[in-house]
Image (cartoon, rainbow, N blue to C red; front, side):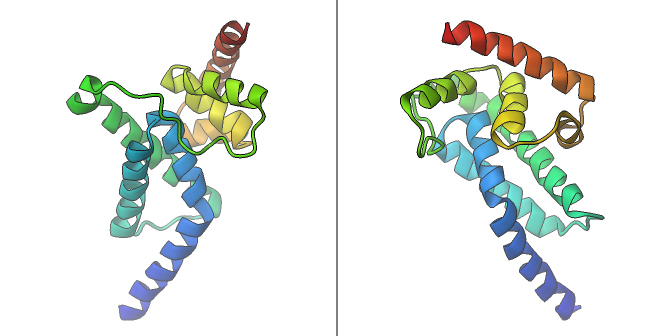
Length: 160
């Protein structure tokens, strides 16, 4: 029993090292404040540690973490407190090594509605396929493609 617990902690550290940046960047794109992204990050990995789920593959683990991140972001966004708070123009540290044009694009992406923003972020910034995004978000692949298309249309309008 004790041996299994040590393995869980070892796997936990490896999981945070491997997927921590992905979880944090995704949280930043959804909640758009550093403080809220920190809370989401902490809650995702706390749940992971407490539940100690088992996965068939690394892809399954990654998809679970992304799905849980999105659920925590949605829960945070729908809370009464967050609906009453006015967000300042606080963009997290996603802008490292970006030129002016890329910063403008990043701001446009972050201003998209949440569903479009998530699809665009995961596809263009994280490099996932529409099939992978559909699995992570528990949506149909056609829904993901539709959100990408609409997100691109909104971006085109915003950047003109």
